Length: 412
Image (cartoon, rainbow, N blue to C red):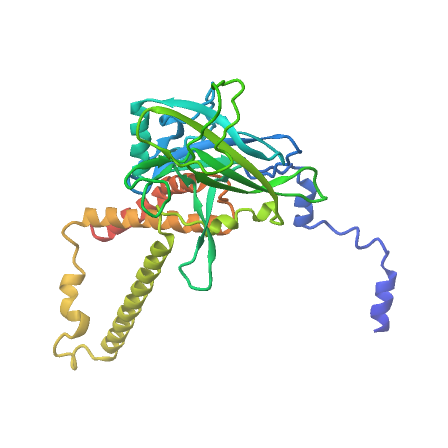
């Protein structure tokens, strides 16, 4: 111990500094400074009081026709100059058509029964509105990259009401005896919307961040006193309540109005999409799809396990028998080896099908990995569709390889 101690004390204190740097240290030293960035639409935006918050309109969708339309394909209030928002491939394939609107929202500035515009509808316009209402079309808006949502309470479970959000809001409704002031079978237009915007404030940043966007539509047949002036609209006498709904029966004027309400929320900007996870998408039954996939995978695994155990047991029995003396007749899999191990009649079609399956399976697996890691944020609209298309193209390489290997093994 004394010798070891003397050797250690004879070394200079700078001995550790004279060692060669490790490869990790060289890599860290050679790394150039880089700047981080946010994906478009993912970075938070702060709004000062009175600052304009742009409301964009998107498409019209229906679960009955599955055919989307552009927002201004129906005679809604339209600005003088329509500006299209740049879209990616996924948004185009989903049918998104995002454009500007006439709605004027100012941060933390409430509005009550504000006139958007007055439209003089012709017979063709009324017929078109009534047709879209009967086809159960829904309107989709976007505010600070958040989609508009309609809130309602699901009381199907007794004693446990659940607040559920539905994407978009209906264009109108059909009259029924349950709705006061309506005629059964008549179409009514939702020409008034109550907009609720939730925002979050903290001391770490200036201004407010939008964390919620809710829309409650209603139908109001507006009335006013005096002559109408587009520059200075008269005060509506129907805003106090008591007015009936706006029917789509004949040509005439329709006044579009909106309310704006601002609510402070404790929801942080990073968690603002959690509310939309409760949103029920009527077009895609995700739970049923996932449930069916899990059942198919489970049953396929069970069948594969049974087949592997049977084959393994047969192979063990064949290896234990003496071929010359004890094997008198073929049993088990040997009875069908002539049919199982011969090339199929349509080998080319089999190879193509296997390659396509590998391509789709690889696309789905990699997409799920990227989604779990958080690269496919719901804030990036169309990102999932774009990623799946690109992966489908790239997975053509392993698909071709597996098809070629299988085709060669079948002596093609």
